[in-house]
Amino acid sequence: MVKITSLAALSLVSGVLGAPGPSQSEGDKDLEARQGYYFQNWSEGGSNIRCVNGAGSSYSANWNSKGGFVCGKGWSGGGARTIKYSGTYNATGPGYLAVYGWTRNPLIEYYIIEAHADLAPNEPWTSKGNFTFDEGTYEIFTSTRVNKPSIEGTRTFQQYWSVRQEQRVGGTVTTKTHFDEWAKHGMRLGNHDYVVLATEGYTKDGGPGSAGSSSITLG
Image (tube, rainbow, N blue to C red; front, side, top):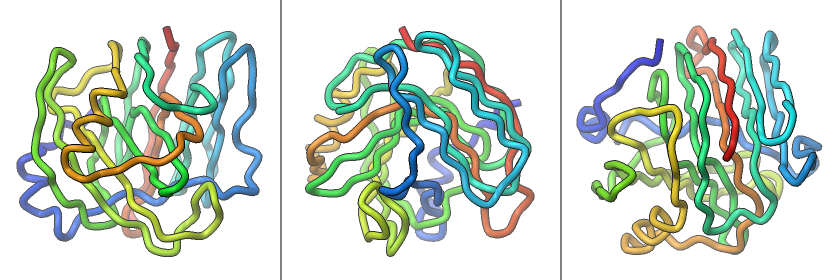
């Protein structure tokens, strides 16, 4: 069962909450091209994680783990896209279903969270306010990772977040709208490296970890 967490409550305690840990190091062979899509399968410190590259634009994930993982499918290059998706997502513990990507120069890790279990980040989040358009209402956050894994190795970098107010599993995500809203708050992106529609789970402060399943198809 997906657990709903109040974004208003999260904003009030954003000084003690923060972003999750999982990121990819440059040396990890975690992205695989298949039929025009990129498939991501990354994990650390956990077991009982099964991430399956399905036919065409689909993937699935099943997990019950105290480690972190990211499983997803998308595109090399990222950038402004209209991403349509459908499927299922059921989870407990810290984790998300999100559009997830990276840019270089500057090095930015970003999330557009569509659904989540426990919204329990590890670094402090700073709220930048809400915005509403025909796809829904999202709250914007920023956070900073210090000496953590990235697509360029161990670095210090910013994270940008849009968190959907009413969760959903299926619909359309217009990334340019989020990028434009972020820019209004001085949240500058660089050269897009890749973007995936990802399932992510992780462990918060030595807690019990996360468990669940997802089955996602793009398009």
